[in-house]
Image (cartoon, rainbow, N blue to C red; front, side, top):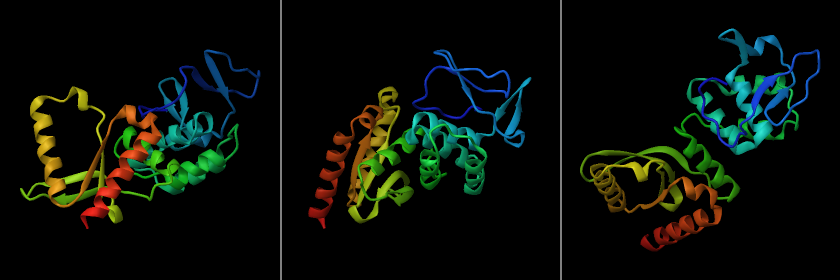
Length: 218
């Protein structure tokens, strides 16, 4: 692919296999079935598959979560769902169409980072009601706060913070004031970091606790 985010992929070089001679994948290089030339774009002196198809190929090889990380970025850059649907018909997927189809069903251009895409997938596998992405609130200070996810019926906000360990003291203070402002509106706030995304039951517990607190506050 181009400079799109990748999650969960192996470290092999992935190449499209030419019709002849037939080549087999190794521990360092993976060969994939060729696709129609219309799905290729120049890349230096070589070619690569178009991003929409490449994202579905990631899903085929490494799972829906991995595919969503790439596909959401492709959609955010302007690709329409129809292009992904066309790619579904054009691709030759080793494991069938189930994973690519799930990616197309769930992709969302409003998700702004790999972490948010992974959060959305985690909510799905935990069977938690769909959250609205990128919702804005006006805080008592007059500042506008846009949150990553909002569970409207549960009055709960989820924020993904992939850089919290690297934040400066001033940034942390500003974020604390922002979070206090959200809470003053009667919202519960759950903050997730990278390590949480590998612990589904911890995330379930955090959300259920927040949902319970929100119910008691009504």
